Image 1 (cartoon, helix red, strand yellow):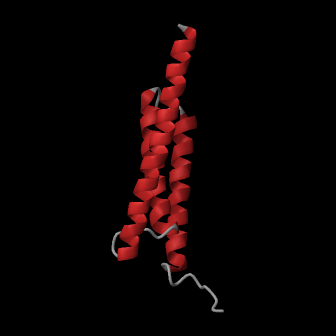
Image 2 (spheres, helix red, strand yellow; image 1 turned 30 degrees about the horizontal axis):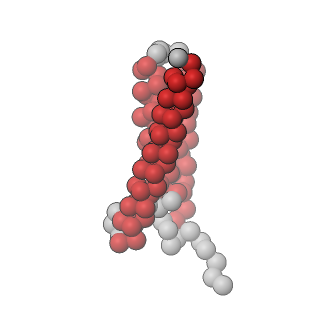
Length: 106
């Protein structure tokens, strides 16, 4: 059994870089939410963008998903399909709950 040193998937430098970027994004999100510099929908929009960037950082630096290899393309396609199914399940569930509430209340 060989010992995994982390070099096969990008090395420790990749993990440290991803960790630092994720830490900065988390601090920025906390500052936006608690700082009071923004208000209303602008806070929501900035947090949504920071969350999307955080997801991309995790996919690249920690899960090592990319488009350069055949396996990477297959993994990204699988991720896209899984995301589509989850969005449909959650979205349709919210729609059903809203419609049920509208029927029950009025």
